[in-house]
Length: 287
Ligand SMILES: [Fe+2]
Image 1 (cartoon, helix red, strand yellow):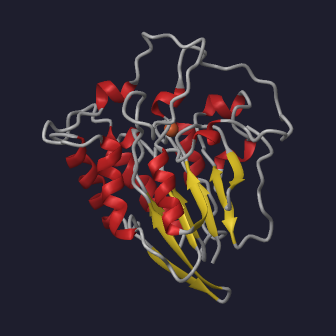
Image 2 (tube, rainbow, N blue to C red):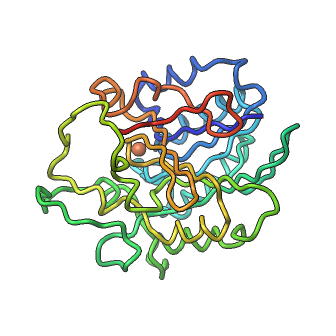
Image 3 (cartoon, rainbow, N blue to C red):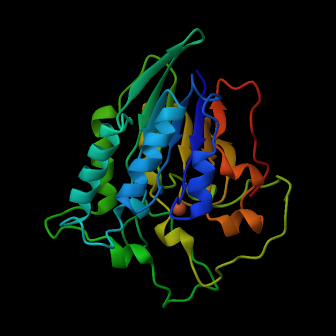
């Protein structure tokens, strides 16, 4: 059994959905997939995608991203009810959203899904916020329109999701691979210093400061308490493979078709990559 990583499928784009259906029906038969959120906000399409991937992989592990919590059709009373409905949908598709032990002839590994949200500037030191000179203060963020938190939520969303992870945060006797949708560390927003550039692309959104909504460093504290060797994440639509203080962090986003065409994502972004027990390792030099 190998372990593959993938995120940000955004199957609302027909091209992306077609690419998922076109993945081999035989190549991943013995493998597990970590799906790190942002499949779609259309729950019918989410179900179709999870069922399709589950037919191709022997195990699929999944955490929702921010797009899944967009409730544009007002199907749920609030975002946490929607989150629960999504986990129920995943379980019905035989997709795992809880820790599980995988084993093969090579030994065993624990997969630990971590739920997460971002912490904004002004919401504490664990925000990943960094100032950006070209930022436009009137830029609107779609989560603010489409994600409706309940009035009864007396914690920040980031803290609420971190608290859901706590029962799984313990010492494991075997290697641990964790994954989340959001970023656990500020450094991951940037390519590693000293790595060669594959392209010289301009910032496509100079007025948008991604670090406002990137993630939360308390997530990294959970990753460290788990003793995770490898952490897979999504959200930023820039692919990464970097080791920091003993943990390897990998992001492999399918992203939007235009991001693949224009070179912001590598051409291999339309299929998952192997991150564990691979014959060949895929390494991103930059992104
Ligand atoms: Fe995304």
